[in-house]
Length: 116
Image (tube, rainbow, N blue to C red; front, side, top):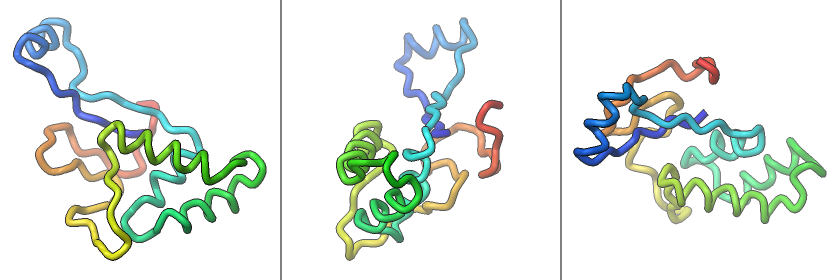
């Protein structure tokens, strides 16, 4: 489950308070996208992620390179993933359950129930 903080303009913020709208979007992930998300931790390159996906899902993930590419592009388009050169190390924490710097959503334990 991805938790993404909503970015409201002033008018939307007023409406959100009036209607008690949540301040985050919860995006459920299927099992393949969950595996890609967990492996995209700055320690695995794209090739190893594809290999893990192929080993875990076999025929279900075919064509694995295209599916992996589409998933990564989707994460990048959402603004929740950044691609780095293989020689780079991320300057941010990739530990599970951490709220990114600059966001105000409440921290939850990494093993939170996805339906809570």
